[in-house]
Length: 318
Image (cartoon, helix red, strand yellow):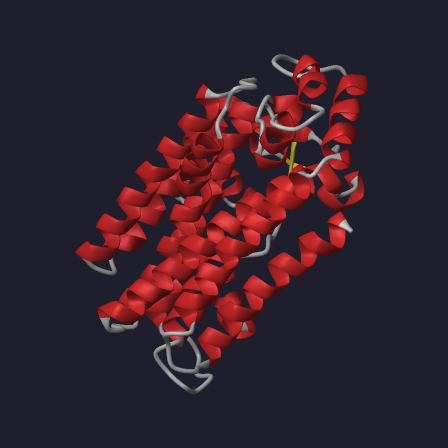
């Protein structure tokens, strides 16, 4: 897998290289900053479930992995503009360094290059990636519609994260299955795993925003509260005995003292524990899907990713 991910890194840089050196610099900015590469890793691992041997990934599997990561990166460029972020992956955000207009165009460029790569893998992959980009937009817009909304429902939250996070992780696994020509039931199981993992992943990420340290996050804790994004632990706490006090602090921009108190209220209640339990349920659904597949290095890697995800949040929340 390490060698395959190195091929992905090279493929990412090759994909965004333009005749305009300035566009190349902007488009490669977050690629050079690194990242966990969860989505391309899932594409490669899913393709690897077609074999019981630990062979290098095919060229098509690497191409699919690059395509899904470019979609993720393009969405980050756009998200940073909307959030007015100044840091992304420990470096200056693109919008902070070059301005919103250039960041938006560079994000569009990354999405276009992802679509170009997907088209080289066939109509089914190209159509799938196009639908996924649409789902990302739908999920993000749904979240924006509920900014600073203390009446936001759990259902609305889950719909938003299904679009903005789970859809791309499900697609990452499905593309791996498609390019490896894996039978449809096998590919469907991989898609279920990726989608379920994506739901758990976003819930865990939202929990960490409330329980991790600023050093671990690379930003102040409670950033979502500051942005008016009330995530699952907050929504659960609003339903509880301290909901009235928390609601009085929310509903609009918050000062640092109010944000700190809001985080304290959420940490003292059962909202974090309830959110972790739901994340575990989603992770279990993903594992159940993997149980239907024959043993392979790919299945082992995907299973380990689900275990690591839950272990990390349980340790942070302890």
